Amino acid sequence: TQLLEQSPQFLSIQEGENLTVYCNSSSVFSSLQWYRQEPGEGPVLLVTVVTGGEVKKLKRLTFQFGDARKDSSLHITAAQPGDTGLYLCAGGLPSGTYKYIFGTGTRLKVLA
Amino acid sequence: NAGVTQTPKFRVLKTGQSMTLLCAQDMNHEYMYWYRQDPGMGLRLIHYSVGEGTTAKGEVPDGYNVSRLKKQNFLLGLESAAPSQTSVYFCASRRHGGAGGELFFGEGSRLTVL
Image (cartoon, rainbow over all chains, first blue to last red; front, side, top):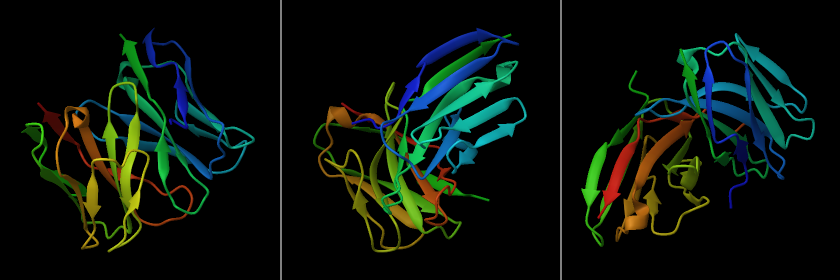
């Protein structure tokens, strides 16, 4: 059972456009992370949010954790070809087992 | 810095054969994880370890076994490989168990079972 659903699954946009990727669950998480993965490599952490309602900005990327800590969004402003990749959200389960559950992934392609 | 190293990077097996994937980390991390990645499924947790000598099941543990005899190494074994285990396998490590700790990943091991 996949606890974290991401949408959209695929996204192809032109350079300069804005986009939002969503990560949704019915479960509560102690923390929510976003990773980016490029072909042939492992995922690399972009950001961690731990407080409900928290918003973090990383240059053109804005991350938000839902108030109830069940969902998150990633917004990219003025996308660039270098943003191309697979974006994965990951939720830390609060049960004390310290498992990280990953979302289904959003594959983004930014065309020049 | 080597970080997290996985071996082998590629392997082709026949159905029923066995193999072991090795993950080694040089960051003195307590927590280690094995994930598999399949198209449209993101990363699914197979097994994980919260310290030397400990292991626990993740979301999809069937058909896999693991061992953590040394803190720096986490082994993933397939006793009798099946075509459904064709996937890319990623190992990750994490320094501590607090909320929000960063996962550091290896480059992946691509396994094909014929």
